[in-house]
Amino acid sequence: MSAAPVAPAALGFEVLAQDGAARLARLTLPHGRVDTPAFMPVGTYGSVKAMTPEELEGLGAQIVLGNTFHLMLRPGSEIVGLHRDGLHGFMGWTGPILTDSGGYQVFSLASLRRIDEDGVSFRSPVDGAHVRMRPEDAMDVQRALASDIAMAFDDCTAYPATAQQARESMQRSMRWALRSHDHYYRSPLGGEPPGSDPPPGHLFGIVQGGMFEELRLESIEALSQREFAGYAIGGLAVGETEQERLQMLDVVAPRLPAQRPRYLMGVGYPHDIVAAVARGVDMFDCVMPTRHARNGHLFTSCGIINIRNAAHQRDTGPIDPACSCSTCRRYSRAYLRHLDRCNEILGVRLATLHNLHFYLQLMRQIRAAIAAGQFAQFAAGILGLPRRPGTPVA
Image (cartoon, rainbow, N blue to C red; front, top):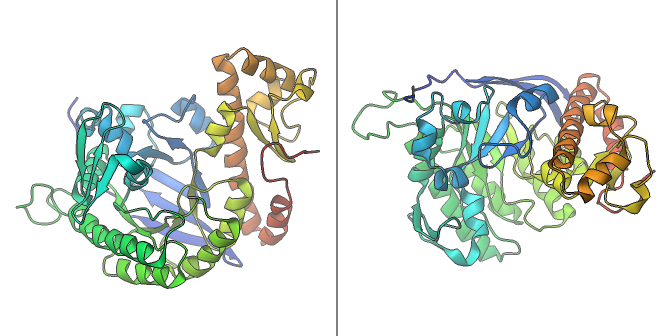
């Protein structure tokens, strides 16, 4: 099949209700509507681990995340582009998709990469081949993937970092953001007028600056030189303390354009999401629900349980009596523990389904609480739960 250009619909973002800084909104994208605050399940290789698109739809997922870096290396954007509608057709997902730029994955390569002003050179973790990635390359890949939301290519600041290191990294990210914007919204052929080959979606800028307030504000000012469709807060969930993260959100979130969606990248635990919603954040992604499921950690209304603990060996009750997911309606903790100990694939699937249901149900509850003007009371209950695996729960 040959790729067909997708004419983008205008990005619509309508705030429907507000409770304090928390916002209930609706995001309209080329492939559908997203109710926010929203959680995006992560589909690194074009697949949310252990889940089919039909199952994700049944859980209520409205948007998923794809990984530009990994899809570029394998199978390659050319292969994905052979499918009608790009990554949507490739993975069989008809709803909206956000693709990250690959900046974080390059950051995580550490000794395998070399950064210069023009871009990044690195050794492929797949086959060791030399790869060159510039902002323009990241935009070309994301256009080929036909994602609804593309992310500007950035230099993710390490933690900890000195003020000088954070400044150099942030300023490089801002120069790359402007190049990303100019290339994403221009025909990749170069000689044709703007709009002759319209991009399939919309581009978000990423605020950087490490743990330094003045650098975060400088980053926001630099991004204002272009019209970005939305704004992400990057460089968090990289090892900083919860207090540091919340301090940066208090600085950044209220200074981002109110008429644009705000996306906190890579966060996190349920209480992290609730705390960020309270500060005006609209969108989230994290591998936590799927990764925790593979490691036997299951989210419940009373905290996180480890299904591998011997305490669950004879427990005929569900993971969470308050949960309505199909795993909890049909299977016991004893059965889930049995499947995990036998390394049965079904165990991973059932645990993943439960955790994703928990996260997506959390977002529905958050939206309902904002609509009812009761978000503060709801948040207090979530923030009072045990926060880490292994913590005793009721």
